[in-house]
Image 1: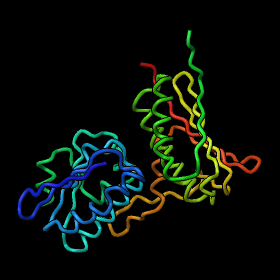
Image 2 (image 1 turned 180 degrees about the horizontal axis):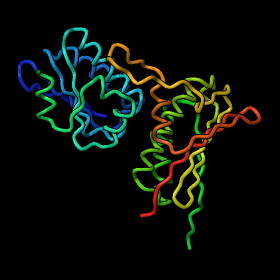
Image 3 (image 1 turned 135 degrees about the vertical axis):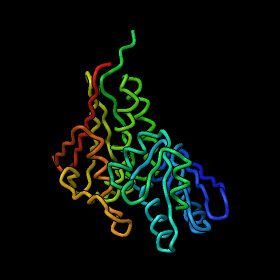
Amino acid sequence: MTIAYTDINDTLRRVSLSGRLDIAGTDAISLQFTALTASARQRAVVDLSAVDFLASIGIRAIVANARAMQQRGSRMVLFVGENGPVAKTLSTTGIDAVIPMFNDLAKAEEAAQA
Amino acid sequence: MNVLAHSAALVLAAQVAELRRAAAWLHAEAGARAVPDEDIARLDLCLHEALANVLDHSGLAADAEVRLRLQVGDGSATLTLDDGGAPYDLTQAVVAARPLTLEDTEPGGLGVLMLRSQADQLEYEYIDGSNHLHITVRWSAA
């Protein structure tokens, strides 16, 4: 499991996760994920396009950080690209209804900054 | 002539550290029996969520055993988890309601919801002091 970030501009950060977001994978990136979204200047796009396994514990980590951002008046959106299994998991659990999810990166970045 | 058996088995310790070994075993054994990749992925997710539930709810000691068995037939595969922990029927467990807002998104119950949505059939038995969960996925012939 790896985590990386790119500051797109002064108000937007892209946090990219890749690998297996199972119990071990979530444990491995949890602190850094929280730190990166907590320090995002305002908005964040979380890139899940390279996540090849998304377990419930990974979803809980995403939700917890999205909720913390919202409470600070900020916003998280999700980018899944062509990652069908991850998109299906987020849709099945209803998470896509509370954290906006996009296939298109430009649209994700636009929505994050709207 | 090397004929692959229709079933495979693995014994795990009831520890989080064993989850990745279980996943690797599933991918190797199901792949060797020509289970389609997308159906292996469904079983993988079910296995992870079911094992996580066993570790959370069974009360098993870390050195207790959890037994896995994979049976592959024509167009279907069934993964069975056996453990000697407290009775816990995942098929009757309360699932998380679909959230309407981030604030009301409940952290619990997601795993059960994911398991039910990925599996084509779930069966549970409690026999002679052991939980037996049978997870089946089915696919169409190519």
